[in-house]
Image (cartoon, rainbow, N blue to C red; front, side):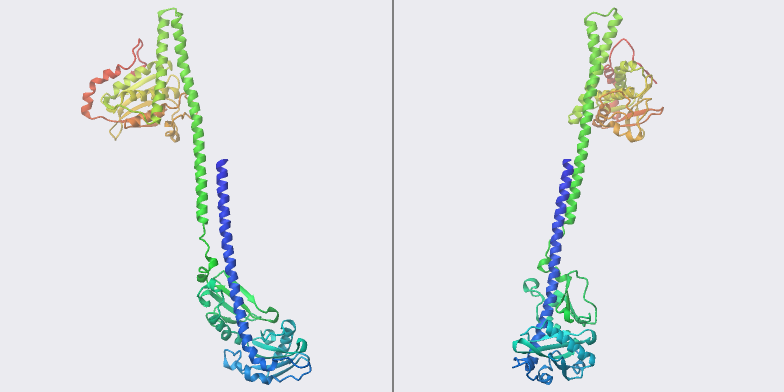
Length: 563
């Protein structure tokens, strides 16, 4: 649970860090879109200021100063022609010929014009639009205003100023009607060239064209100006996600500006300097934490399993020790109290004590070998020796155990095989393999023991065959692990370390241990050992009798036959 909580906490921290980075990114993106809105507003505001500054002086002769009374005669629109002829010029000179100067009497709604003759639709549009604008939005003291036409007056624009009477009563509006293109490149091109659209602290010294792409359209959506080329060409670049639009005067068909930060410029702006995404690092840390937690869980499970196996090992060893000790104690007390009735009974009691003591010694040696192997303290004394006499000595020592289990031993010993071994370690290997064969084989079975040469690799081979159920292929490596027993629960108790000791001793002697199927059914446990040089065989040939003398004496012969 602690490891799961650690992973959950890491996941929560990764999520919070991701959300913080995401919030930072969204804030930066909102700021960039706000910069785009600021640029659009600045473009319209600067354009409006330029129109006001240009139109105001041109219309001043007709509107400057207040009238003495609401009934004062109004000057004709002809007075505007001299000063307003160069204001809001069209892109095409031919369009300037359609320029109209007008006076709209706000008391009677009478429209008087000079210059080009407007159409009836254009006259109605000028009268309605200017009157509504003056009533709704025009403030006293405002020098001039401009409107771009839509509907019946599409493609036309109006610039006007208001003549006031006492108490700021509007008397008349004076102005001019020109083409809508006058609010295009001639006006906003100058704004783009001269007026910075973003504060210097944000955009630095970068020109407007490098920062933003902008376009200006009228209320009907017709594009009047687009940065980077004529208005009729490619639309505003949609590649940048940082775009905004602003309408300066939507109620009267005013202009709308759209601005988009260029991707290359957005990366350089202050608000865009966000740290790189840490999502891959966060995900990597989370995956690493989960992997470490999984490994820790597997390790805990392995340690739990090891603790269980060690507990079983302790219980099994205790049981294995108790049985021979009980036998030794029983027959020892029988002898010490003189309860035997004949020499045969005394001999049987003594043989039982010796047999159980050997069994106890074998178990203790296994435990000691295993403990020394685990601590890497096992040391062997290797020498060249013929293997057949060593196996005979081991078989002689094992004969009483085989006789008690009603097991017959069949041997096949090649007298010429000489290997570099530790005699005591080899004896322990053979006894462990024989003990394993008896545990996992049926009563009355024939156990084969042999010595020969391995096929093809020039190594000595020692094997033990039983008539038990055999070892499944998927378990043939697992059985050599400590504390592992047969899957079917056969084999009695045991310590579970006999085969592990076999493999470790074989490794220390430069060999290997493996298990396969016996020729007659059952399992074959084999140990391969390095062969000794031919000269060493003669040198150690006389040692066979000495090694064989390690076997027990006794009245009965060994329960094995040579083939």
